Image (cartoon, rainbow, N blue to C red; front, side, top):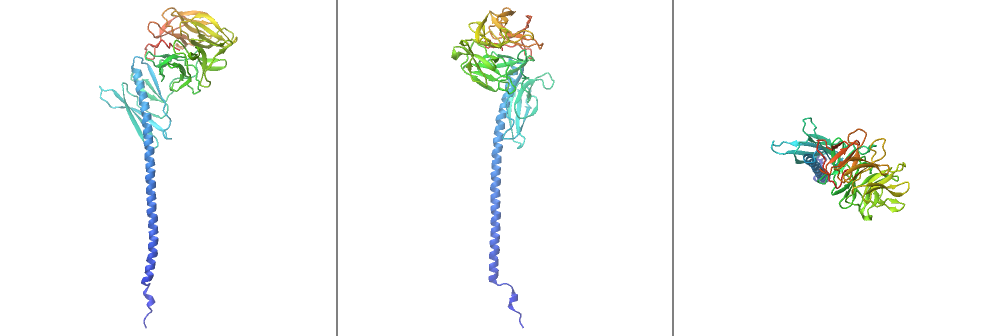
Length: 451
């Protein structure tokens, strides 16, 4: 008997239906795979594009900062090899991060033939991505090879390796020992070079140069007005702007309309407020005060404003234990008597702007004002009593007191009228030339004098 035909398996129609189901499932899976691959490719390409763009931004920023540092290296090299050479420090204010990442600063020397100038290479590298940028600058001096963290830097010219030759050293150290002013006075002389560069000089011979254009008058570097740990130098521009600049070259304008010639600036505390004091040409040369905290305004007395050609500064001039404010008006040293709220004269004649800030020249003496009259240098104290320190040969320009010899007593620094160079004289009358760390004498712009 024949077996049933049902054992022969599925019919053709049944197989056709199964193939369609399998084909649909496979197509769906393939579509998912292809879609996933396309999306992944797009995401990868997009991510790579963003990363490439970010690296390009980082590279451009690093390149800009490298150029800034290279310019600072070149400035230090140029300043240290000119006729105003000495110990030079140049600040380069770089940010601590680029695109959110820290970066490394490397300074090296490119190999050059002996008869060719040295080439200093500055390289900045992102510590995360590894992106870097380099700038090469020709320098007369070799650079000390260095690798330091990115941020505010200082280029110092000094012997870094003990070979008796000074190198360009890039460092993160403080620009200067800028502690609070000493009780006997400030630690640095302030002057303008004959070529117009605002400069300060410390007793150890270190020079600091500042980015300040067309300086016509200066004041002492004695007060940290903005509380950033660096004392500012007040100065007047040719346009009559009163500005403050610190060792990091941060510049702030605190007033306009100041007298621009034959004048001096003062800093200190008077009537409970620390200010820069100056003669305001826009208001008949009245004495004004200003600071980073307060806008410009007149110094008033019972009789109104105070007319002045130059301002010496605050001190107790009449021995009543109350701070007064000294100034020069019509070639005479005068002061605002704070107790009487009136102006008074000391009876001392002064040449033009030949006056400096009052200082306690010794720990036991009252405040004394250095003044220049008929080319003689005097110190004035107790409302008109004066002693002569130098007879003849003194330029009618601002003078100042400073502890130049480190003996806890101040000397007076003035401008020599025959050489236009700075000299220092002790209270006993011994006088010597002021020199920098290399023994070079200091020539100055006599219009600004020394503060």
